Image 1: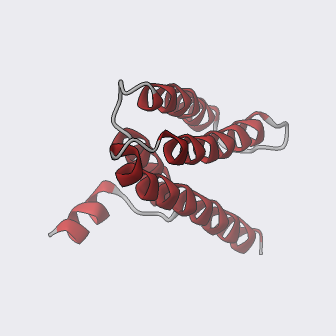
Image 2: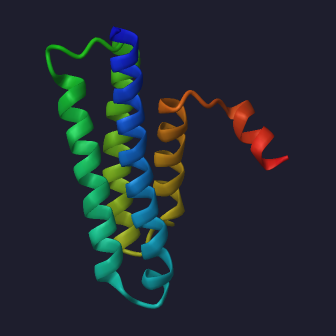
Image 3: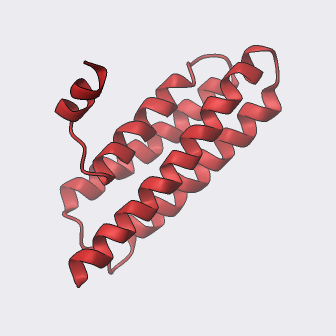
Length: 120
């Protein structure tokens, strides 16, 4: 039963990542036309996701291995830094989309090989 709860939790997390990815994807063409507000809102949503994930990772009850926690916390810092750079025109929003897509795939149990199969 615990496995099912973990699987459904991972699925819920993957769905949240999918919503953030959709928000970023939707903001990209608007941002290209000068709509900074649309991108700022998408980046804010991305930051909220990563902040919530960081709080969970640092909570006493989180049972992920320390190496995974550390890697995800590093991605959180990276994601927030890139978000600021996107708004300043110093980074491509695709970087945020790619990071979130990778994490979402991991939550869904997809590997790099799965990605290649989809592309083929």
